[in-house]
Image (tube, rainbow, N blue to C red):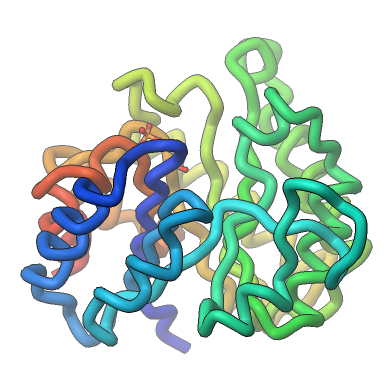
Length: 247
Ligand SMILES: O=C(CO)COP(=O)(O)O
């Protein structure tokens, strides 16, 4: 099985109507290799406009959804609402949500299962903090985060895992290709042992954290790195090079 390369662009809480339009024009000008999937995640308010403007080779995601279809949950949106708007992807469990909005491993697992059941594919984010890497517990941390998802999710067909070490996010301090490969390999073995050989073989594992046009190719050369989740550089023309980093 050949895993298709996957490049996600996480805009985070950035942009405006005018900037979103410029980014759509930029993205529509990129060549998307046939073996590569591209999904961008604008702020929720702009998701529909961006989705309307993008060429069909590029899909959109929301940056979060809740675990109910509807009801008295002020400020939340549901995966059912995404489907209603023709949006098939959501990013869940990003470290910024875990950190600033107190999202627990269990909550992320539940939201992942709920989105999948609604027919929305999930980019599930995991990753250790600097102090956890320094304490040599990186594998324990990512295994704990994976377990919370695997407890709720049996079918991993529509899950993409994004390994994003927190110390590498927005810092310019990218993991070395070897550091990333080590964790990706561990995650694939974890999937083989705890979910299935098939899930291990087929699940894309992305790297995220200070990926840019200059470092993407060496990272993409590693056997267990199946793509990227890109923050800052997804708002710049170099995102076009990142999309082509496997080609
Ligand atoms: O958090 C990230 C993507 O979700 C990575 O952000 P940067 O690429 O800006 O480091």
